[in-house]
Figure (tube, rainbow over the protein chains, first blue to last red):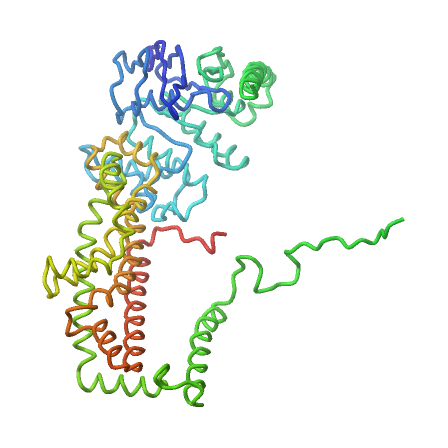
Length: 262
Length: 281
């Protein structure tokens, strides 16, 4: 499969309170077409920083990020993004939020409406079309955000801990929903999380990052068969993978912990 | 052995319902009743103090005297003329301030350059007393309405612009990032995302600053006016017509209350999508 996204020796250094901080250094990774890849690591390891760079919203200070073989030089509608915090437009209804990005496309109104209705159904928000984000629960808001990012069929989707702010039950339901939607669409996804189970359940491959300066520590192939479901988490292979990744993260977390203590 | 039956400190949230739990909701009728009873109590005290002759009418005229003054000003047509002149000055002065405060505040809230450019100057001027500008504004603008507008502008603008800057800054950065990904240009992000997102806050700033404009009315009509609610108060002071002073203060208070209420109602009507939390709970 062709590589959709490639990071080559990416580094990001910025000035914080007059001091140089290296958020990520020498980071190499690739995401193939139709692949679901997760980036996992302790908090503050720079995984979100990388995602923002991959989205084109910021630029690396070293190395480069290629999308379809070309260096990224700004945000693009082809690389959609779902943030952890709610970025829905509060003055627009669920329906209007999802249609927002479609408006810039030369698409007849009927087709726009069809697409919006289709995605509202896929994320299970029928009956809430006219509701404003303020009147929705956290899980529902993130479903709108996912539908809004998918509706214009971007070539790739960046997700920055999209379920991080949700409670445990809602989180599980959202993972299931994303799994269901993704296994039909197979959009290329780069998913940032610090939840190991979430990463294994959803991904084809998982990159484990080191703590600051963030770089790739190891790469783990998730060879669990698809379609997956929450039941997958009970399989022996899942438990093995979880153990393996947790061990890697534990060592990293410990290292950063002692670093902070010093 | 020490006393083993030591009192366990009781939790302050008890099973018994009380209207005085922190942030507890109370029945609407009780809320309204409380709001009416305090002014009513003050009114009764006022009436008692004056009708019993405990206070000289020069210090505090009776409610009846104020009422008669109201009837006199209404029948003479003074009150309407004063109100018309003052409302006109408030409206123009405040609009003038707003016309400048909105674009400059939006620029300051979005671009650090403009924040750096304007903030030091604004911070300096906003602590200068508006009253002190009265002689200068007369010198510069004469004794007409322009001078009144200028005082209202000075009293309002420098606060308003900073508040609008803060309103704009409450728009989360993620919302701007998402808009860029959706392919919006910088200008479109500003007009189609940042502006609508900060509008409810800006509307609230309008409500507050218009209220402040009312408090500057007397300052604006302090000198070189021959009509207006503030002027009437200053004139009454010279002749010790306390009933006219109190009437003027009450009318300004009521007009301020009405404009405040209008902004509150339109806010609810214009921005039905705003999350309204109950006592922050």
